[in-house]
Image (cartoon, rainbow, N blue to C red; front, side, top):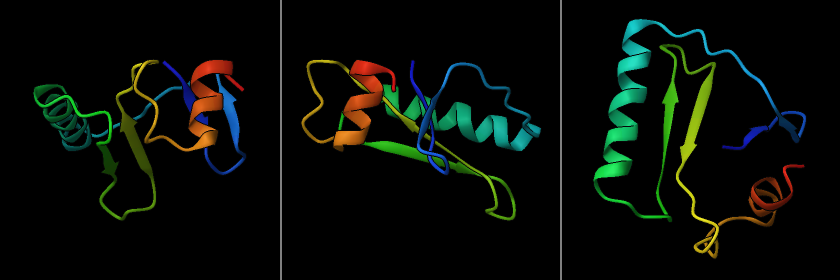
Length: 80
């Protein structure tokens, strides 16, 4: 697992997610869809009701990173 703070462009080690029930259900459904059809080019966005906060979920495999940005590869391989 890797976590990127996109505003500060830094790797995070620990986070807490505060989610409403409908947001947690959306995250659950999105992860389920990603796992049902594993495609390392796909990802999911989960937003709050006002689109002020967002979680992006990406499945990765170290052997399939061709479609990822260089920054994403740094996070995955170097955790920086």
